[in-house]
Image (cartoon, rainbow, N blue to C red; front, side, top):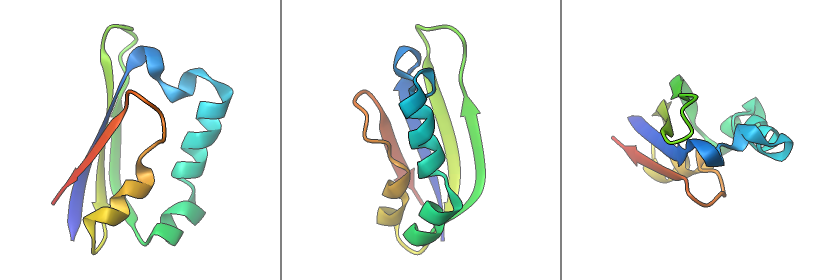
Amino acid sequence: MLFEATHTHPAAMCPLLKPEGKAMIKQLFSDENVKKAGIKIAAAYMSCPKDTAADHKGFFTIETDNAEKVKVLRPNDRGSETSPTP
């Protein structure tokens, strides 16, 4: 089954602004983590405007048998939100 997961965070809180955030993103989307979670990323798109007042948004099409498995892509930072829908 395909799920669309949308992730949003404020531009000022973007994890890519810090080295540890970059490492976290690499780990979240690593082949090992995705395979371990039992999901397949069919498509991904990020919108990251330079305007610090804007939100960054990520759109991910995930193939899996259970929406709960999509939560593996949810970063553990405050101010972010990830919601999967079939």
